[in-house]
Structures are given as structure tokens and as C-alpha cells.
Picture 1: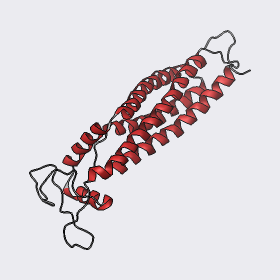
Picture 2 (picture 1 turned 90 degrees about the vertical axis):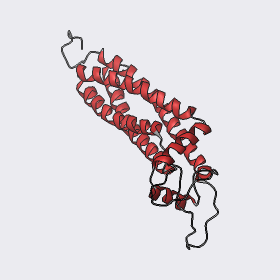
Picture 3 (picture 1 turned 180 degrees about the horizontal axis):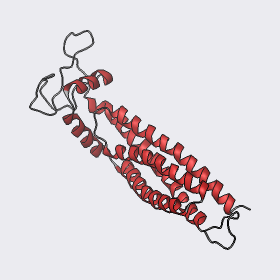
Picture 4 (picture 1 turned 180 degrees about the vertical axis):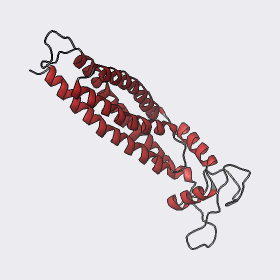
Length: 217
């Protein structure tokens, strides 16, 4: 009957297979967030990426524990999954709570740390010039004293200086979308991990009908 040993075993096995899929989704979302931002320093998105990788590893442990009804594996799986639930829930809420001003500060930190080659690539990719409207030296491919300096903005034909919008104005929507995407996915799937913890606790305290009927597993 549903709720018995076999049902709990199959449900936990299916849930861990789902976690593997979820882990790959989190990894793809985090990689997209980093790639789309290019130069921004996004440690929160890095946390989502780490959660995705770790969730896949934990799911493998859960699969073995569910199939073998191994008490040790199930115990460690339950504890690790609960800790991952707390981390992923916190990181997802942090992603959703980051406002536009904080996103701009993170982007500014990232811009100040990357080299001129990457800044030039961003300017070509987004057809923009510099980080913001503030005056900064254009000292391409040399040691600029101002960390916010940027390469000279030239059009593709190499003619006169390009008059373009600052890069932050064009990156803002992309960065905001990356945060909301990672936060939404992380928050949604963190609730499924709570179901996994509850199901594991229940499954550990059930008897295996194929084992000794007098043994409580």
C-alpha cells in the first residue's frame, strides 16, 4: 500500500533522480548568469553553482542508501541534505533580495579587477564604452592607475572614437535577470529538498518486509 516500505523506497529513489536533474538545472542557470554578466563579480551565483554540484553528489549517496536501505548512508544523506537545504534557501533569498544599487556595486568591483583585454571584449560585445558616465582614463593594455579605466572605444572600422552608452546601462538588465533566475530556481527546488529530508526520516524507521520481521531497521 502507498506509504509502506516499497512505496517509500520508490518515492525516495525517484526524488533523488529528480535531484540529479535539479542539480544540472542549477549548474546551467549559474553558468548562464556568470557568462551573461562577463565581468561582474557574482559570488552569490557561485553559491548556486556549488549547491548544484553538491546536490548531484548527495543524490548519488541518497540513491545507494535508498536502494540498499542502508542506515548509515541514509543518516548522512539526511543530515547533508538538510544542511544543503539551509544553504540553498539562504543563497536563493539573497539573490532575490539584491537590489539594483547593490548589483551595480558588484559590477563595479568586477570591472575594477579584470584586465583591459576582457574590458575591450565587453565593449565590443555590448557596443558600449567604459563602465559608467564618470570620466576615466583610457589607457589600453597598460598599467592604468585608475582601476575603472577602460580601453579606447573604437568602431569596427577603426575610425574616430565611438560615442556609445556606458556598459553598466546595458549590463544592468542582464545582471538583474541572472540574479532573479538563479534565486527563483534555487528557492523553488529548496522546498523539494525539505520533502526529501522528511521522506528519508520516514523511510529509515520502516521495516524491510524481506528482512527478519523481528528486526527494526
